[in-house]
Image (cartoon, rainbow, N blue to C red):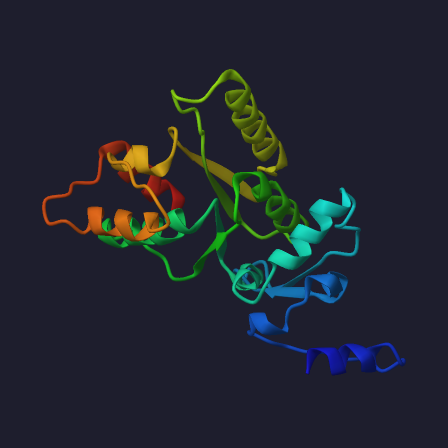
Length: 219
């Protein structure tokens, strides 16, 4: 349906589509996306539309941003705030911890960016559409890493922080990684499941520092 409407619009036919469906968002047509907001009666209704070029980086980065914005990740266009995380472990664990702490919010959308190095791409998109967000990342400063790997980790952190526009975004970091903050080491392909089992143990207590970070994420 989206393709049919887009084709009609190329033949001097004006198309207006109002939707709450992330399946009808195509980042390749991002200049046609208008986000309508009414946060308060005093401010009234506002419309945010990005008319400048998003794809100004390398071809690789452009391809990644376009291909990674699938219907699941496209929910970011409808969120009150977007929580950007590195991978599936954080996506599984952070909401569960928030529910255990009674700070979880359903109007916050959590997006798996697939890697730390990809988070700046999402920050860029959210900045342009003025969507509030929190970038959540691991410092990755493991003791077993050599100097070269530590340098890469520090560079990725610097690039991520530089991409955040403080008008819309903020960051929360985990010391080394989220498993370290949880107090255990999860290995293998089932890391998210192992982590969930750990925090669901009856005697598990969320460390104070981690509890504060989860609360900060959902503020």
